[in-house]
Amino acid sequence: MITNSVSGTRIDEIAGGIYRITTPFPDLLPGGFSFNQYLVVDDEPLLFHTGLRRMFPLVREAIEAVIPAARLRYLGLSHFEADECGSMNEFLAVAPSAQPLASALGTMVSVNDMADRTGRGLADGEEFSTGAHRLAWIYTPHVPHGWDCGVLFDHTTQTLLCGDLFTQGGFDNPPVTEQEVLGPSERFRKPLDYFAHSLGSGAILEKLAALRPTTLACMHGSAFRGDGSALLRGLSAILGREASLANLTPH
Image 1 (cartoon, helix red, strand yellow):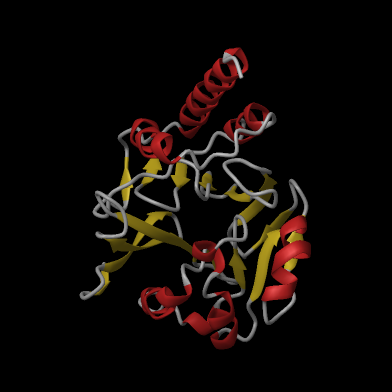
Image 2: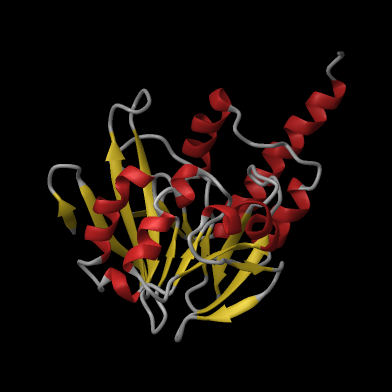
């Protein structure tokens, strides 16, 4: 459903009670780009990624096509970056019960200084409920980037809110696709090289694959529906080969 005809912002349900909000930016990069936020509609609604500060009116408008923005209870962020939490304080101002939600490290080093209300820092594997949805925080330092990085897994729908993993370029991606997104995301990643190439990447990606997600809620591009474990292991294999080649390259 398009919620703003000027910007092209829209909201679509991609799993039970989980909505993808997207705003296209056709001129931001060659081929265009998009920014997604994910709204978990429940007794205590959660917004994962707030979007850039200047996107606040668009994201709020999209949320309010489904629920009042004032009902938001959690504002989640994968890591501290403008597109993750740029409009965090604007949402805190309109949602009196909302609380920032991030890794324990991210809350300590960034969120509690920048946010107008104290955040909730989550430990690796910590679970919480929004009502019908049971979510777990998975700490993923440097995967794909950010010492404070982490993702959310919804056990109820087997949805992995996977942040910048599997970022796809373009600005007109369908809300959800069953076509594999590893190829398109790798074509986007390699020229920009925005991964941290951590020594722990393989183990972290395997931990995510073991969750057996059936939906990957990507922050840029389409959400993916299908065998998420296979894509995560495919990405791990690619990064492993890159690491091996790097070790063999003379300096």
